[in-house]
Amino acid sequence: MIRYPTFQPTDNPLIFKFIKNLSDRLIKGKGTGPACRIYPCSEHSISRSQISDEALKVLSRLKQSGFEAYLVGGCVRDLLLGREPKDFDVVTDARPEQIKTIFRNCRLIGRRFRLAHIYFGRSLVEVATFRGGDSNGDRVLENGRLLRDNVYGTLEEDVWRRDFSVNALYYNAHDFSVVDFVGGMEDHEKGVLRLIGDPEERYREDPVRMLRAIRFSTKLGFIIDPGCERLITTLSGLLREIPPARLYDETLKLFLSGYAVQTFELLRRYRLFEILFPETEKCLAREKHGFPLVFLAKALENTDIRTGQEKPVTAYFLFAAFLWEPVRARVEAQIQNGQNEFIAIQQAAGDVIRLQSKTTALPRRVALPMREVWSLQPRFKNRSGDRPFKLLEHPRFRAAFDFLALRASTGDIDPELPDWWEKFQHSDEAEQKKMLHGSNRRSRRRTRFKSSGKSPAVN
Ligand code: ATP
Ligand code: MG
Image 1 (cartoon, rainbow, N blue to C red):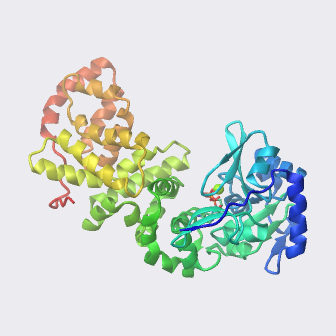
Image 2 (image 1 turned 180 degrees about the vertical axis):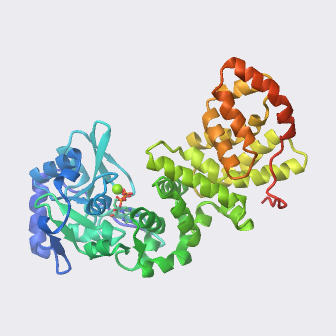
Image 3 (image 1 turned 90 degrees about the horizontal axis):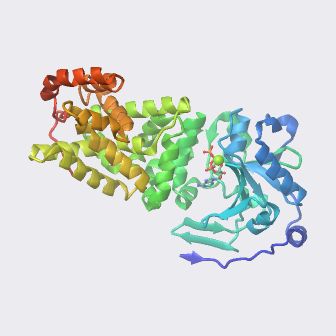
């Protein structure tokens, strides 16, 4: 592990600015370098009306305090495409401690990357200090991978720390131009995702960039530059070194972007899915065109429809779907060995959650409801006495019912079961009682976990 000393900047913005200007002039002269292209206001399509009031306030306050201030990253890329950005990221030459003195509503966060969050009620604008390329300051590397990166620098240097050229365009708050050091505008026009610098080095430095390539390619409809694309399958294993908590966050971003179906296909094509969901991939590989694939495709299609309609999609439902086949296969095997179905589900859920947590951490708020969704599945089969009424009152009834319907829509169970429950939950009490009576005969006929047709292989 290489550890560089920490550089402590002055907190006084005016003294800092003076020293910085002097050193800029002494060391290299102020300028943007030969590779830089500036697109004035008239040559790009971004208008201030597309930018949130909060982001404009942050830019103008930094400017008034004598600092450089730019919008950067996804927001500039999305504004150029005429899309509404998810969030606005600001970058400046002010140090985190200085940003804190300018904004009262500011909190400094992060260890790997120290950032300032400026709060406006419930929304926030993230402000980062330009990162530098040299080895002064607080940077920690291990096997070529960045563990911490708090080396501050100039705008020119900050560019080289970004991932794709289209994410490295800077919208200047001083004259509203777009500053481009890496041909990002051209790539943007061509619809190409190209890593800045040597692709292999950049993937090794942060393997999550492989996942980001897939996410942006589906979200923007951009192609991945062939030089960057062909390395993904070879280097996919590097993702195993990423902490599970970060991979969990990235997985959610991948599948909640509104393009889950395409993302899933690409992740499988580049052999990244098997890193994120090893147990699921084993099941998919066993039954190439069978139920597990159809089930997941349907779950992801529903996720995309909900995201498109701006309806909430819960992480636990998504993970419940991803991990259902490994759970189901284990349950089926245990039932064949004479195990009780309820106990079999508990054991299978425990095993699968433990294995999955090695790759993507599963917070308790996700693991618990996910386990409930699975555990409630056999309870839907019991349609006599008080039990259906108790199930209706269960806090996880709705999600478990949706999961049941999803299973039925892909042939895992007979659709008659969710149809019955659909009617039951919307009937009055008298009708419900009649249904119970009539359902006793039906429920006896159908109580087994449906077999996938092949002998279950449990790991
Ligand atoms: P989104 O629309 O998902 O917010 P984004 O490009 O803004 O996309 P963020 O994760 O918000 O993505 O990151 C903001 C910017 O920070 C990126 O555009 C990129 O310039 C830089 N960045 C983020 N993650 C990385 C990374 N792993 N490696 C290099 N640069 C990164
Ligand atoms: Mg962003």
